[in-house]
Length: 499
Image (cartoon, rainbow, N blue to C red; front, top):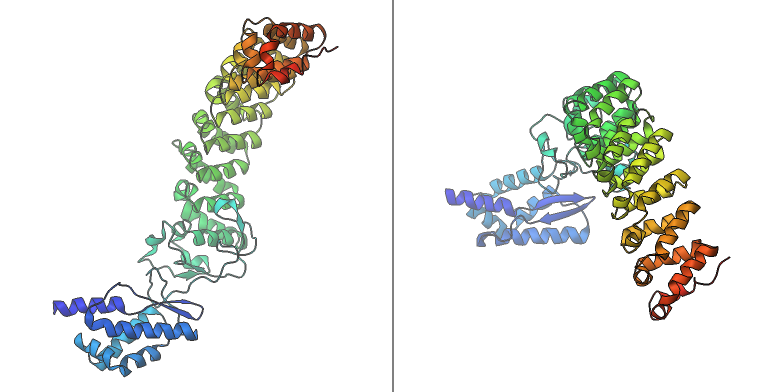
């Protein structure tokens, strides 16, 4: 009996597994080998598949039953398993029923199933992402999708969703068109690609009642959804359509126990938090966000995802509300300015600050200019201050660099800062810089250095009169060496007298 059971299971594995694309049937074996007495079953299965492939028509249950009953080899194969002709027909009929319903809707090819027959696959998609048109729906990578003529959503259309398995065993229809059909399951489908789009569509099509219905089912999971690959887009859409009472509930949920910083550091959550900042309506709401972000602002500034939240604050909040960011930038100037992401945020702080705030930031950058100028990222912050082209800011920076110009000129990053000082500094500061280079005991080394030679070229270009003549005279003893130097010709071309 046990042997018969094993052979029966093997036979089930070898019965064609039917999938459909339009009218073409695929017959895919579920096993790579079969017992010898099933070879005839395989032969018939293969010939049936070939016939379908050649004719392009749908294989009906009558065709399969006819093939089985008319072929003595196939009947014998079933007989070895203990089935008579009628039993064999019944077995095959049940397998056909399992594979698809009367409308030839096959089970999906990955083996998922639902009660009541096979599942209908989604129709062809025009944009490769699931929906047509443009209806303001948030989708992956912040693209915008609409719904076209697709009126229903197939729950099992994609097995890629991390929450899809949670639907197994629940009384949720495979396809749904109304909120009533998914009531009680909204949180789960919000984490599914197609379910998320369905809910966003309901925000656009429905009224406040539909918004409230969706809101009530997801509010207790709002922090999780903000960090979900699909759920974060639903939250963004919700923030656009919710009323002020609902917005306050969201804020209370995400601003407690450091949750907002944690969400901001997440690659998906950062988008939702930026949308939250964009949609703040009242001073009370702004105060809640500031309080939640303030303790983690330095961590956010230095984070790949979090820095975008800080920059969105700079863009959307007032100068007074952003004071917590300016204070952190000034207090942690070197730490932030020497960081890959922090140096960009520091420059944005200078952009969005008003007079007294900018003056404080510039003073801190200038005070650390010698250290920052030598850093791969900090040098850009110093150059940015010089690019402001204000006399007081450039004078502050150059005052901190005086006495170190020769040393700085021979370094990759700081040599760019010295060149910027020569081009944008005030006249008096530039003159002192040129004199320092002219009188340097390392001038011969500077002339042939791979970085410093560009500084000397810039000095020769910007200075005039006696200052230019003095530098040329200082270079003259080194002319023989320069003629054999890879950089010498460029320097020699700039040694002609200037008026």
